[in-house]
Image (cartoon, rainbow, N blue to C red):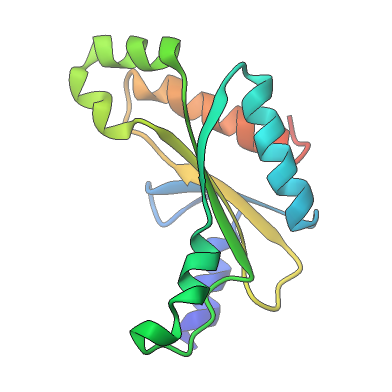
Length: 145
């Protein structure tokens, strides 16, 4: 009962889990969304620093940690940074370093046709410019921008 509720919350197009993150869902294929994210990041003049294959890691280690729960069909996290924007937000408050690099995740839950793309939300102030960038990238990746 709890797992379907968690899945339903994770698939909303509004900010999910209170102020923690923003997510969007699409019926596009996982491959198309992953391709779209990478292109949207590059389209902003940025470079993907790394791609974490979270879903693969969790599946590969599932039995090792004593679990039989399949969490994702696939889950990837793209990490990147903007030198200009990072400098700007850190000049406003050097403690904004805690948010860098910036991440966008893409996931598909087992037995689901939809794909979710999202990012963590940021506090009011200078970091809202980063949030706006992440929102543009996420929406561009799925053709909403």
